[in-house]
Image (cartoon, rainbow, N blue to C red; front, side):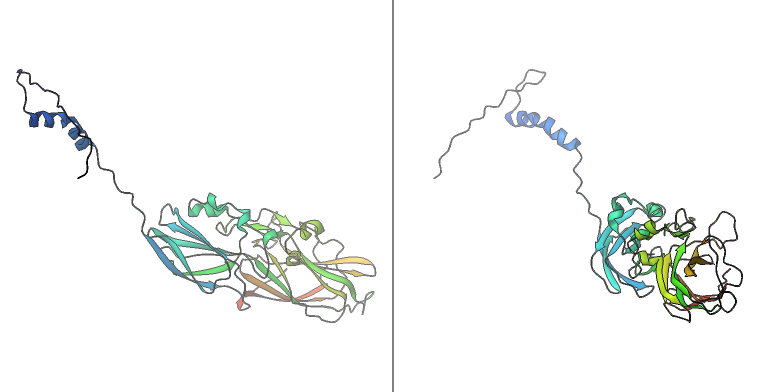
Length: 340
């Protein structure tokens, strides 16, 4: 038999206002009454509720043959606030389907791919409206792996199409055919091509914003171009000596620019061809139409006489013959195009 200390309890005598001593049972009940009342008046602690979690399979449709080097999934709750619900980053190159995790309150998903997240604090995103200030920068673009974005239709997260914000200008072929004096039969030397007034920043979730900064404003800026992660996006060497037609299939990239040169004060993006003729550098600026995202502007160029000595001055009349088409990013016919 276990032994232990005996505990003695001597209840305090409790009296009524009439001087009578109460029974032990009643005295015990009265002694514990305040504590009972306190417990009765204290609301019970509510258990913490964890939002229900769901996994959603999202089918990704890609515009163009591009590589996905990881994607960012941002889930948002429903209107009117579209608050951020969940965020995930998936490394690697997912195929055409990914699985995202959010709460059951999530109704819309935004997907970004190939975005250099180190240049932007994702923690600053609180709602879908916050994405309006999210910049894409030409300095970060890799033409073979362009930054892509896409958003689902409200309330439907099952399928998202990822598109680039870049415009693609393709110089499919070029020839030099000088048939007039004094340069008849001569070739253009050290030929290269580049973009001027190339929009270097855009905001895909605020597509109506007009370009605010330009690369190569008026003429080639060698230093700024070299600072790009991929300078070949705006500058290409074509031939040491150009006579007959060659097919460089040279692609140039920049962000959309709605200007077609008809409105004063709105620079038009140009493809400038540059070369030397008898030691003098000549330029052939080609005004591009209003550039749109996710579009390809393909052209075949023939140079027929000496150009201008200023890359920001329109080409001499009759010095360029141009055949051009506008296609979608994948090379399918899209629309008619008119170059100046």
